[in-house]
Amino acid sequence: MQRYAFPNIEQLSQAFADFAATTLQNTLSQKQHATLVVPGGNTPRYYLPALAKCALPWDRVTVTLSDERWVDVTNEQSNEHLVKQYLMSHLPSTTRFVGLKTRHDNPSDAIEEIHQRLDKLPLPLSLTVLGLGEDGHIASLFPGMNPDLLSRHHCIAVAPPIAPSLRVSLSLAMLAQSEQIALVVTGKNKRKLLDELTELPNPEKPLVWLLQQTNAPIIAFEMDIV
Image 1 (spheres, helix red, strand yellow):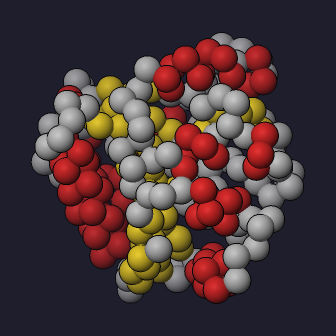
Image 2 (cartoon, helix red, strand yellow):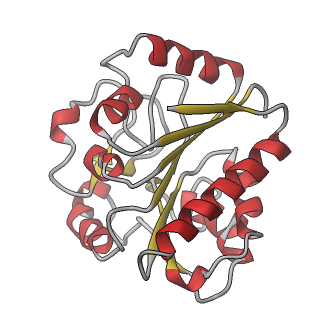
Image 3 (cartoon, one colour):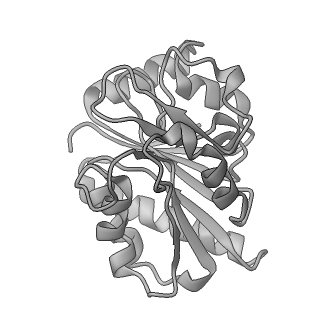
């Protein structure tokens, strides 16, 4: 893992945007289409608008999510809502977006439909962007799950240990097969956790599962406070 630290969110956002744009452009120089996976959370509100300013053939890029809360897509807690507000609304209308939410009341009933959506993406995923939870979770893969059971489909239904809503997440296998992975880590506690997991990998942490299963280059963009 290559790690880069920044003094403020503006510099981190610009460095991330430059990296992501270069990665996608490199993919598009070899393939007709690329797939970009983005997370929810607070930090993407800063770096997604920076990425949207990059000059890319966005009509050849498909955007999807690393995970989704099982709420209406107009809900403020929805990752789709966030990504449409901070990224898609700034991109050409020809840019394709594939959400994870369905009409089903429970994500467990939606897995086959979401799997089929994801299976139609340009695969493998060109660039997957992830955050890091203070418990070591990535996307909506949490400690306590059995990583060996997460790869039957491209996605899984999740009942988080402490959270108000059910979720759906890309599977560990789907994430691990990405061509390139970017990790955006903000806050002292999360950076400290990343230090610990780098020095002494804890097999209970989902980030460690990913590090052990992927062959993709991983770039970490870090800062203490956001």
